[in-house]
Image (cartoon, rainbow, N blue to C red; front, side, top):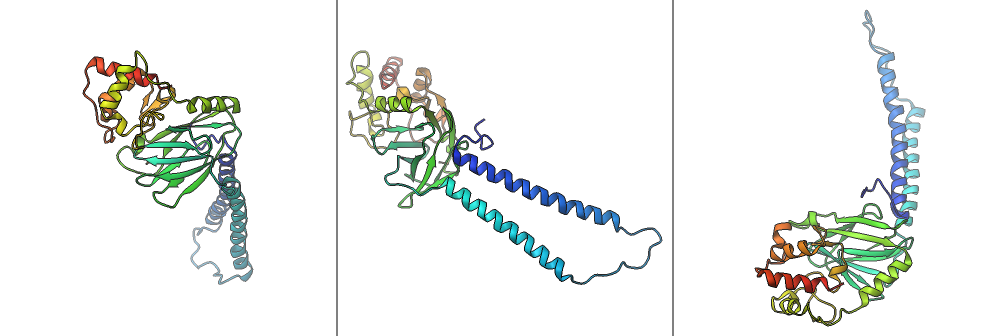
Length: 308
Ligand code: CUA
């Protein structure tokens, strides 16, 4: 279940424990107060034939001190456990961060500071390691949220960058989403966090570092179309172009699990359909559709699938 109800990292577990404990304490107090109110209402209700007012009580210093001090002590206790939890969730950031995640309308750019690997909508992390992500935004405010692993955190355009520690207790694919309304496709601004063993992570990173070989048959025609149809104006393909980061880097598109930040499974058929009309799947997306002949479309997909 991709929900905060299923914590899978030390920080998500800490938040969960804090929630459960505060709810339990609050629940016990609620039960005591509601019980006493019901008891008093039943025990001291007006009886038949009773006409005079009950004895009136004005002020009771001991009671008043007690019911002022008790909640104050309780809140002080909750403050202590909250601050302790915050220190577990947000230990001091380090420089440089392990990854930089940038929110775009409506996808995520992910850059690994040390290796220089750039990818999109998919964050790979080694299991049981704390990974520090710096959060940035290219256009509007987004919010980074992987419910099973970490709290929500805003991604703010400009100089104000936030950081967040990410970790996963066990290998798996954890789904995340943008948690701050950021335009029409906010709901389709999804990401995957792939937690894997250190060896698998290292292998993945090595593979991401490979610059794809110059296109050869049968991908040559597709590579030409990619250049000529202006795809390169927005999408970089490892070193081969000097493209801007307007759209996701496609150097290793073929190895990703989804297309369009989670809207489609990454299959050749879906890729072809996406190129023809991205707006059919993500209305409002900034990528235009391309009217291509069947042969051109097939060639383009063949080329893109070689980008492993
Ligand atoms: Cu990005 Cu909502």
